[in-house]
Image (cartoon, rainbow, N blue to C red; front, side):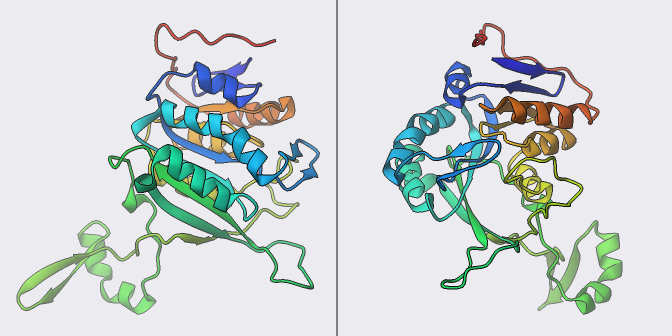
Length: 285
């Protein structure tokens, strides 16, 4: 059912497969989902147990099919998981989205409490990035990383200021234009949120805004529609609205919807938006 709506977002408290089936074709610009990892654990806010990996993939399959359908041809999807499902999910995503539409496997490296005494400690997650077609949006300039030596930056400081963030070198009479920031890599060293972090909303497995910001900046533009069908603590929604995007969120947990609603209400937006005419979203009891 529709839990909350304002000018920037729509939040649904129901099974994500239900809302996915009600959305129109070619509608969403970007999907990011921090999915169920199938750890077998029961967290305060949700039960992370889908059975065997094979049973988990069977549960995900109809949802992935619908996610592909609702994505625009220029759209992208990022699915966030860990080692328990990533290899099974990669095979299924290749099947549904097409192996040629696999873009990246992003490794999120982090430091957190807890270490293993009899194996290498698990301190990374996996994010599978697929497009719907080869004509997908990717904003390289929004997510470049500063890896240029300080000496280089000082040497070309005047050029960088003069040429709007670029500088030129010359060789054999030709001018070569450079950006002082390097292209983004597929491993991200971003700190996880400690329990006392001011971003924390009291929701288990909450992800840092910095992680989601990079995805939203890279794969969507201002005014685009971003969706998260495993909404959790609402980080995707908050970042999307802050960045001038519209947001569709869904979670089976009412508490997740309430936390997300409060995060959205703490922000100021501008333009009211509606679903296309003729779209009938049924309220679920």
